[in-house]
Amino acid sequence: MLYQLYEAQRSLMEPFADFALASSKMLGNPVSPLAQNPMVQRLSASYDLMYRLGKDYLKPQFGIASIDFNGSEVAVREAVEVDMPFCELRHFKTFCDNSATLETLEKLPAVLLVAPLSGHYATLLRDTVKTMLQGHKVYITDWKNARLVPLSEGEFHLDDYVNYIQNFIRHIQKTHGHCHVMSVCQPTVPVLAAVSLMASRGEHLPLSMTMMGGPIDATKSPTAVNNLAMNKSFSWFENNVIYRVPANFPGAGRRVYPGFLQHTGFVAMNPDRHLKSHYDYFKDLIKGDNSNAESHRQFYDEYNAVLDMDADYYLETIATVFQDFKLVNGTWDVLSESGTVERVRPQDIKQCALLTVEGELDDISGSGQTKAALKLCSGVPNTDKSHYEVKGAGHYGIFSGRRWREMVYPQVSDFILSYHVSTKPKRRVTSTAK
Image 1 (cartoon, helix red, strand yellow):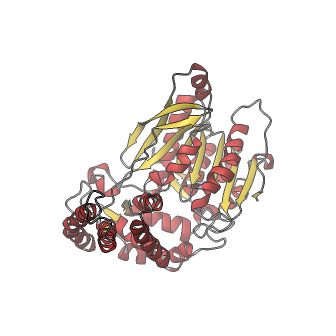
Image 2 (cartoon, one colour; image 1 turned 120 degrees about the vertical axis):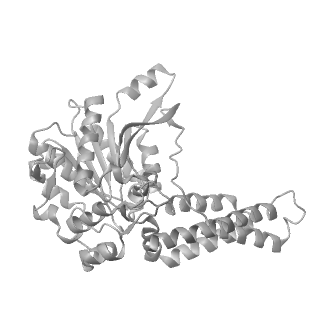
Image 3 (tube, one colour; image 1 turned 120 degrees about the horizontal axis):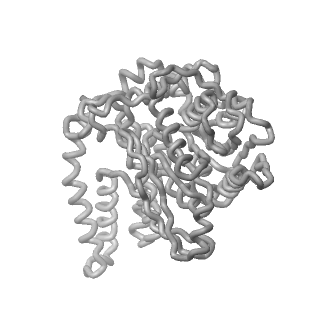
C-alpha cells in the first residue's frame, strides 16, 4: 500500500513541479526587465529549488561521446552486447580514423566493470568509465530497474547475480581472448563468488581482479550501514521494506525494495549535509554562480535517480553478506544455471591476480573489509596480491573525482597492465597513497 501512496503523491506533485519550472524560467529570463530585481531573483531561485525537490528523477545517461586518447579525439559509442532480464552488458566502443591510434586501441586490456546493484544506476560510475577508457576496453553491468521487469521474466536471486557475472566474463573472454574484472562496492562479494566457482570447475579465469570498497568481510570495522543490516532481523527487512510494484509499471506485482525508500535512507544518513547543499544551491542561483549551480544539478540528478531492487536478491544479500557472513565462514552455496549446488571456495583461485582498494575514510565499507579478500584467496601467490589504501578518500573518492583520477586510477591501470602481457615483468602496487 505504501508504494501506491507514494505513486499517488508523485503524480499529484508532478503538475506543481512543472509549474515551478515554468515560473522559474519566466521570472529568470534575462530579457525580462524584472530579472535584475533582487526580489524577483529570489522568487525565481525559490521556484527552481521547488522544481528540483518535487520533480521525478529518471535514469541518467552516461553521455560519454568522446575521449582524448594520447592527443587524438576518439569517439565513443555505447552498445548492449548481452541483454538479460535484469541486466545489460554495455560496451563502450571506441572509434578513430587515425590508424596508429586505432591499432593501439585494439591492443588495450578488456575490463569488465561490475557496477553496484544497491539503489543507484550504473551511471554512478560515469567518471570511472570515462577514466578507464583512457587505457582499456570497458564493459559495464547496467542493472535494470526491477519495477520495469515483467513477472514473466521470473525471480532474481543473489545466485542469479553470480551466474550473470560468469556469463559476462565468458562473453568478454570469447570476444577478446582475455578479461580483467573490476568491482566497486557491493559486487565485490558476488564477483569473488563467481570467479571462485569458475576456478573450482577448472574454467579459464580472468587475468586479474580489482576489488574496491566492498563488504567482503563485514565483521571488520562495521559502519552504520553494516550495523543496520546486522542489528535488524531478516524478518524485519522482509516486513518493513519490501512492497509490490503498482499496476502502472511493467513489473506490476513484483516484490521489490523500492527506490524511494532507499533514497530516504541515503538522505537520512547525512540530512544536514543535504540541507546545506540545497541552501547553497539557492544562494548560487541568486548570485548567478552558474558553475556551482550546474555542479549541484549534475550531482543530484545522479543521486536522486534510484531503482527498485528485486526482493529476493536484496534479502538474500542481507542474510549472506551482513548476517551470516557466508563468504568468510566458507558456508556459501550457489545454485548454478545447470541446477547444481556448488560451494564457494575462494582458496581454489590460483591464477588470477588480486588487487584490493580501500579508502582511508570510507564510512560505507570499513577498513579491512575489502582487504579480507587477500586472505580468502590463499591459493593466489603473495607476489600476485596487492592492497592499496587511499589516504584521505571516502567511499566515493576511490572511484570518482580527483583522488580516483590522480591517485587510484594510475595504480589500478598499472596493476591491470602488469598482468595483461605475459612477457611484461609483474609489478607490485604500493600499499598506501600519500
